[in-house]
Length: 311
Image 1 (cartoon, helix red, strand yellow):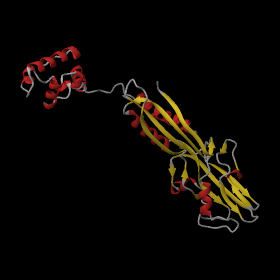
Image 2 (cartoon, rainbow, N blue to C red):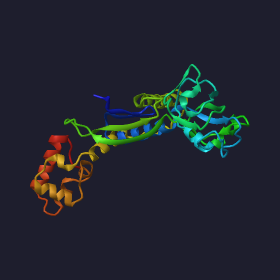
Image 3 (spheres, rainbow, N blue to C red):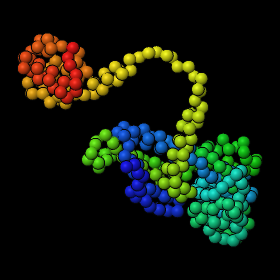
Image 4 (cartoon, rainbow, N blue to C red):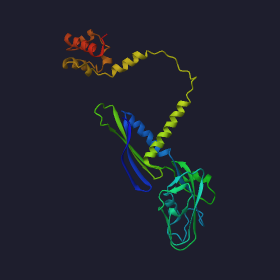
């Protein structure tokens, strides 16, 4: 019975969630296809909220310094990029932060919109070394994947410093295939996914979101099928082709022949029923060490087990 099972789950930090999920059973060979597809969607297609620009009072570029700050501006920006925002954002939004007294500045010092929360409010931003009027603003926006700072220039006002935006809620995805524990058949397998997120989305929710995205893609393809599409009408002997394919999948081992007859067929490079049925009884008798008794055994087993006869 198909299932999605959580094998392991842990919260390493507020912005580091991990889950190990088992999906299956799947038909043998599909695990790799599904795993690759889900991994790509999880890493590149899930939306998130990130800082795209920073504005600091009395600072014109990222290589400047403020005598009231312990860190330089580059370090401040790197720390800001680690903040994870969660919530609904319909359009770009500016968030402000003001600090007047000496001490540590963290993400919880931001004045938040009511629809937004910060997953890691204790994320360190910087330290004021003395009482001073420190003012900082960030522009946050929706997006996908990773966008370089140069691409954000068009949406920023001139006094904002562009920032490389990390929108991805999923930071890491690993997958592997393992056999099922079903003794009934070996034609199925399990897909095991390891998903790590930034805390704005639980790993299982990220999996469901990715599955929904893929489902919508296939629905779009199906809904746009042109009913007037003209196929090349070529009559093919479909039943015969299917029969040939199925016979080629049946190995001569399934005839349960004697060792002598089996070895003779193998030496003649006959490995499946599709190849065997190309020969007649006289052809078999022409094989080295293949006698009338072996030929009779082959024909009887063919008829009994598969209702087939030689040419």
